[in-house]
Length: 492
View 1 (cartoon, rainbow, N blue to C red):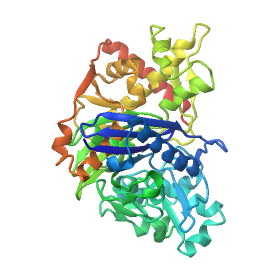
View 2 (view 1 turned 90 degrees about the horizontal axis):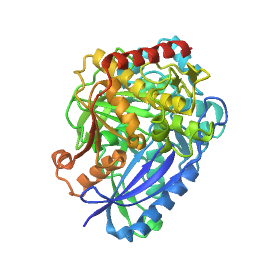
View 3 (view 1 turned 135 degrees about the horizontal axis):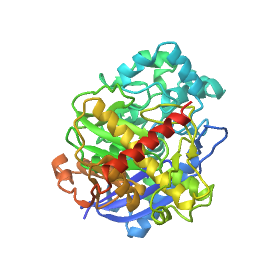
C-alpha cells in the first residue's frame, strides 16, 4: 500500500490528509487559521501561524494513521491562490502579514491603472482583469508601504510567493523558491501565452524580476520536505492552486467540462482545452493545468463569499449554531419569503467586478424570520452560479449538461437542490467532497507511478449523487429575476 500526504492550505483552515493508492482518505487533521481585518476591506493572515499549523496537522495526520514519514511516498500541495507573501531569503521571515485574495486595499491603485489605459494590456497577456483580487497590486502595495521591502529587493534578498511558494520554501528548508504554473497565472505578472514572467507587466507594477519564483509543471518535482520536520524526507510531486486542483480532482479533463467548488468563496472553472478563450462578459481566462508539458486552459468565474456568508450568519448574527445547521434552518420555511441576500462583504466578483459594492439583505418584512434569511444566503450562491454560467454561454461555450460540485457546502442538500432548480441542469456530487486535496493527490500519484496517465485518474471518478431540477421553470425564473434586481440596487 502506498500513501500520499496532501497539504490543503485554504483561506479558512489548514487541512492535511493522507490518502491510500485508491484515493481513499486514511486520516486527516485540520486547524482553523485566524483572519485579520485591520481596516474595512482589508484581509490578512499570519504566515507563521499557517506554517506552524501545517507542521502540526501533518504530524497529527501521521499519528492518527499510525504511519511514519518513511511510509509516505509523496506529498501534494494545494493552496489559496493570489494571497501574497514577501519574505527575507536569508532569515525566511515574512515582512508583513499575508495579504489575502479577498483584500481590497488596492482598489484605488487598480482604478488609476485602468484610467491610464492598461486594462487591455493586462487582459491580453494574463487573461485576467485589473482587479485587487490578484497578486501584483498587493506586491506593489507592500513595496510602497513596508520600509524594509525595497532595501532587501535591492540586495537580492527579497522573495515573493503565493502561499504554495512560501510553504515550499519552508518545507525544503529554504532551498527551493518555486511555484506551479496555475499559481503563477493568477498574479497579473505571468503571460499565459508564452508561459513566462512578463517583463512589460513587471515594469507596469514597478516590480523586480529577481523576487519571483521559478515556474514548474503541476506534477513536477518541487523538492523534498526536509527530514528534520517529520523524520524522513518526502518528495513533493504535485502542486496546484485550489480551484485548478479541484478541476483535476473532479476529473474534468475534456474541453467543456465544468466544476464548482464552494468553500470560503465559490469558484466555477471550465476546461477550455488547448485554446485561450477570451471572455466579453467579465470572466477570466486562466491556465487549468500543465502536466508533463501539456497545457490545458480554463475559463473561470469567482464568487467572493460563499461559506463566509454562512460563517457570518453563525458568528456575527448568531442565527446558526454551526454551518451544517443551515440546511435544517433553510428547510424550515417554504421559500425565502421575498428576502434577497447579496453577500458583497468584500465587493462583487465575476461577472460584475465591483470592488466597492457592499452587502445587503433586502425584502425584509415583519413576517421575515430566521429561516428566510438563511435560505436567502444559500440561494445567493445558486444565483451567483447562474450569473457565471450564463456569461460562459454568452461567450460561446456550449450549453452545460451537468455541474460537478465539491467543497464544504456541497454537503448541504437544500443548496444542491436549489442549484439544480435555478440552473436547470443536474448537479452531481462525488464520493468525496474534498476534491481540491484529491486533485493534488492525483498529481503526486502520477509522479510516483501510482497512475500512468489522466485516464487512470478519470477511471476512479464515481458519481455519488445527482440532484435534478424539479421547480416549475416560471417560478425559478421569477426568483432569479428578483436576484438580478437586487444586484442592480447594491452596485456602486
